[in-house]
Length: 313
Image 1 (cartoon, helix red, strand yellow):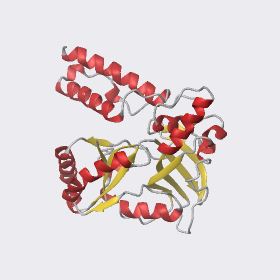
Image 2: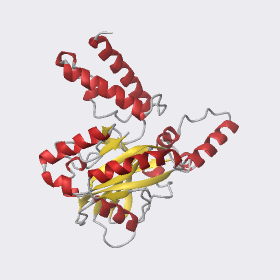
Image 3: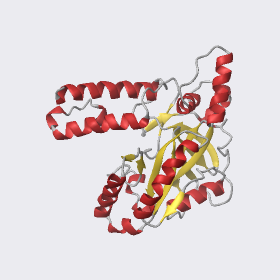
């Protein structure tokens, strides 16, 4: 097959995957399979610029919201993750960051299990939940506030006094395997087709027009990021972010760890990979973050989205 024909085939496969994943909530490919196809297409386009096209999936930020739900512009973009498939790619990622700022090598890292669910953003005004939204394309999501209010893990009011006037909490809504099995058993009894996987059921649950339907899915959430919009909050590290989230009343993924350097991360990854299939929820990798937040260029709206957070596959 010629490079041109392969590019066309990859674009067709990826566009279909995007529609099924973002719009229909019926994915056919795993995230890892999608990422490998995406990378092959990006490599072919980079090797021969004449094959590049503005309508290629590589030029998309993500799929846009496509439902009757109201749109919600995120005050700060919800950025995607870079991928690292082996130790060499993870080391190369650190090298790229170190060329921008040599302090990265001594800043430490955190590792967090990547939950395979639906990313959400929660806006709190004076400590009270006012808006909950899906990620959408990272710039504009869908307002699913009433549905998210049915998720018991999400505080309607933040605990404590150190709460900025306006703050966004980022996290992942998911469906534990136990709840997923119960949901599919209930659907079988009523003659409805089963859901393909917990991620599909969680994402679809958030977009129900009746919050009662969302509540019946028994969704859960882990929080992992704080974006202060108005006010001050001293959080110098990602480790401090996770501790602050817990203090406010959010659950955080319990297997997160702090590492002094990338060598320690590399040594720990095999154990974390072995852990994934034993978890009570669907997970699809490990997220590595630079611990010092002032070095997390990718966690802000900057020139290198995702550069501070690769996901190990």
